[in-house]
Image 1 (tube, rainbow, N blue to C red):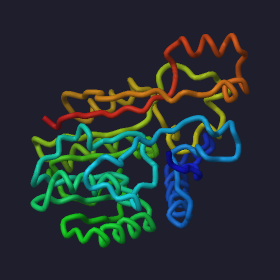
Image 2: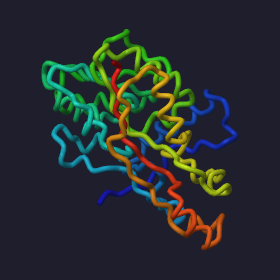
Image 3: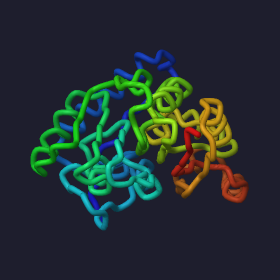
Length: 280
């Protein structure tokens, strides 16, 4: 029901330097802001049918606080759905983009709470601030910063949310350590992200077209969960999981029909998950 036309940042295996990755992400998201078309998570509206293989984004239309101008269709879940945000909470949204999840969180935390959106791209921060001005909100702020070095004080947040962003962060261990640091002792997070399960066909896994946005930097699910637990989080729970169905025309570039059937029955693939965990 939405037009989706712009790919998220392509990150190839040649980019092994974290600064290279961050520069690509920043430049691509700056272009997304300036584009007049709606955007999507994984290049779903491209003229190349091989790229039209998935729709990650969930609909926000039914959520209180939703602002269409802030919805760039860049997410892969609804992190506020399981975030347990209460009136008066301080909420941090990592990779806040144009502010979509922040405005939904603000509807839940109310006038007595505070919502901070953190984004790496100056153009995104500016767009989010303009959207907040339209809503005349005085307890939502947008700041520029790096998820690997969050510019907030220790134990200052009740809830951290993020939507399909941490897979783009080069050092996920550092990112989750930072999330742990800024959360209050009784705080928690709810994050939607993309992970892998099992082995993808070798050619497919190496295809740069696959590594656009949502799959860029994606880890095996078990590795992802291990990083979260090693950062100190408890009660790590997957609240929702959905598979990204790769079409036969994409798989046929790398494997034959018999192998396609075997792959589909193996349980391997790309998944979006919504994950919660507690600091204590």
